[in-house]
Image (tube, rainbow, N blue to C red; front, side):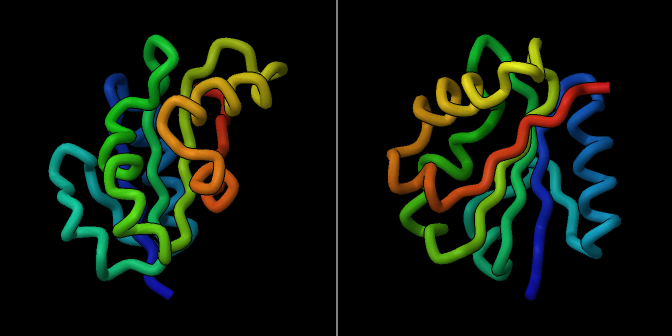
Length: 116
């Protein structure tokens, strides 16, 4: 099973999480800025990580806008930098509903770890 970790990082925290995840899984690591949709097709699992800015997951359009072409893959999204981790379930619903249909949300894994 092939895995890629794609990240968009403004201050470096998301990049660090992405590196740790890729290293632990033995996955490829790619910056979202240098990744096109075609680059994702060879992988069975796509892990996308980015910061949350003004209630939006940075660069998530790469996944959300192309969901139909990626729906047969295992998709996992993680974010870094939420304000209050104690209320993460509220944020998960609020943020993910902006980008994914209900069916897409239920087939995609989401994680909102606390920024360091």
